[in-house]
Image 1: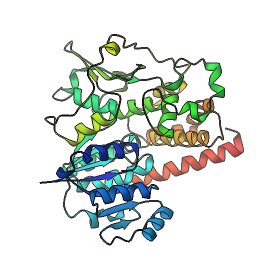
Image 2: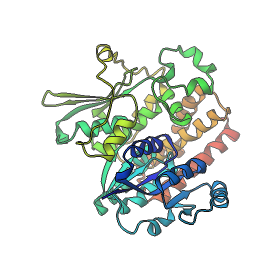
Image 3: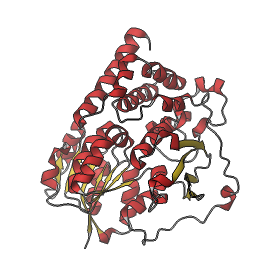
Image 4: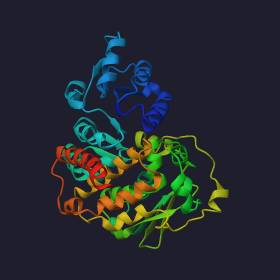
Amino acid sequence: MKKKIAILGSTGSIGKCLIDIIKRDKKNFEIVLLTSNENYKELLKQAKFFKVKNLIITNVECYNKFKKNNNSRKIKIYNNFENFEKIFKKKIDYTMSSISGIQGLKPTIEIIKYTKKIAIANKESIICGWDLIEKKLNKYKTKFIPVDSEHFSIWYALKDIEKNLIEKIYLTASGGPFLDKSLKNLNKVNIKQVTNHPNWKMGKKISTDSATMINKVFEVIEAKRLFKVSYKKLAIIIHPKSYVHAIIKLKNGITKIIVHDTNMKIPIFNSLYSSKKIINSKKLDFETLNNLDFKAVNPIKFPLIKVLKMLPNNTSLFETILVSINDKFVELFLSNRIKFTDISRKMHKMLNLYNFKKYKKIKPKNIDEIIKMNTKIKNDIEYFIKTRNV
């Protein structure tokens, strides 16, 4: 029997990687739903190839263009995620949630009741709404697998390991494109330089987050949520080759090091199939293993690492504020409104405002509260920039 699956964000890098994996095993899968925001042409290609009957295009302009140019009566096209009940008559086998940004939170939470397993590649969902996600997972008995390479590696290494055995979890960071660049030269770097990651092919937003290393701050928050450990048991270590994805030191004297090829195919493949399924991968790279070159993170060069000291131990709306502020300043940088070094400087300034620090004591109650906070913060930043020269 074919596995029925849905891909939220099928035209992004994660979605495309999953599509490529399924293409080689097409006979064993039926794609029930594909979604995209703007890339409707790529979405149509995917739909035709897999004979997908349900599509969601969230951008109104692109949705209208698609409807105008598509003559197939076999494809049902929707403009939002309010139509899951019409699409899913019973639980499907697998869902990939790979919509980027805070807009991925609501569909991630809403689709849980319709799927037996969900793989989540959306950082913002886990950082801002993990308590809400976990509640839904438990309610509908849906299995969860993290897809981010570091968290997948930790998840895989901790199978059958009791949490009280964990002494320390190390998440590796490549250091991005400016690891060996002097601080004085970072004021002049352009968008192309910032988004030119040495190891990974990623979008501009996540590449910028890697260059500032805020992505690792986010990953530490995710790890705390997913594996229920304190911040004291989590650390970031620089590993320029990105070959080791996680190191877990256990109290029984054993240390686990997870290594895999520098691509997202490995975690995505293993989230889709059981451990008995075989994938072709590169031979073990002993040259890299002989020179792992681990380094401590320099907080002067990567000042956003200091944000870790500002985080509350409890789940709060402050994490949503952190994500929203970063999103806005990265957006300003990618539109050439601020310099690269302004991202970290302005973020620290904003995060230390009492207006935002007070939210460390407030726990998010629902999805709408998180989404409203995200919108409010971005509007506040525009206001502060215009009136206070933030």
